[in-house]
Length: 632
Image (cartoon, rainbow, N blue to C red; front, top):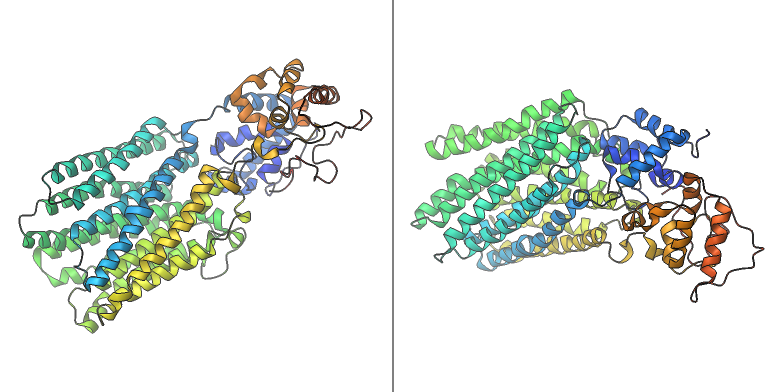
């Protein structure tokens, strides 16, 4: 049997699914199920194979078999119908991402900007309490970074490992636990002077540890069920997840010690000894290692850069993961002993981090224009500049002794804070913005090339971060810089707000991001044609449901199939699938449509009926389905 489509690595998935909807069952088995919208994601077979870790030749063979073998196609059709029921796991990322957006625009960036203005007005970084700073920091780490990590991991890692997400409802429980712990711990730290603050904080810590532990159990179970080889990116991800749990335990204890400190001296001692290691576990451990896990696994496909060999990736892991443990250990040892030699040795883990990152990044040559498809991807600029900010933060760490010598300041809160901001906003937040824009568009089946370039978001976020880093360091040299440092926080908040509105609209299908379902096909055309989709015909003319049933399409009464498969297949396709005479079906559908009091006026019966799949005429008649059959 001659295939309906010459399938090649560069064949777009929407074109393939339009020509043969049954082939989607193959891709569902490799992790596409529930993602990509009605027509599938705007990507090629080669891109899908690279992103999901599927052998391209094997994928092409399976697709061609469905196209040419009627028995295989029938099996795929039954599998597609079985997969049609929506699952919570297919869109679990939305709950985590939307919650993260709310938190970053309130307790995260907004609160941070407010604290920055208070610092500026007071002319000192001690112008706000440590409890306010830590409450804001916890919201940033757990409500912004951790929620995005969890949402992405729940959605992507099981699909990369070709398994279903274990216990999706328990994953939802972990989401609830995260939200409750963020609120409880934040309120307790702000209201530290009240008697109920400490027990409330303890409850919040317990919920956080439980939520994170549940997350780890689900991820480890998914990994155990997978038959995929243990690759370096998995090691990076597991190390990041371990850091996530460790920081929850450490953070809970550290915050409790601060809330129960008997005097100011004890409070300052707790901060001086234990605050920096906590941030190292959170930033260099949890966030940076997870970003490198995703980068090694996905960026060669996403950006078109070279694959990272396992040998090179293992070298990077062998440098970066131990570096986190070493910098935490050395700092604690120095704090307890006071030996300056131990402080000087901190340059070793910082250098290990920089070298490990360079091992991965150097072959990608991100200082050059990206190859295809990264050159045309709006997320590429965010990813490239994010890595630049990361390397800048590592360089600033290595230059810390020189800065101390030049400034004469034994420990500069301003300089150290600037380093933290360069990596948290410049690297981590920039990466979340870039990847979030890419991932959500793909999962929603939206071609990112047709979306806004987010140039304003990119410019404001970088400008805000640059001002924050520069002005904060400037406060060591002149108090005037305190007066204007708050501007940086406002710019960053505006950038994140614009991006958050865009991302939420895509996830919720609001406005122009409304799913291309039946409602998008109104008003009804003058005549039902072969290229019209089944669900659209029933939407225009509800009385045609009986016609479909009479011709053997009894499953059209199933509301789940009507919302899924019926939105994907045209009349010509479904007749070919079922062996139904297309001419007779069209004649009966148009006759039923003509009996509708509000239905369209039909042309004379002598009007010929097109039998080709695709748009008839110029495609501009009212109600024509403008979803292209070929291309994106």
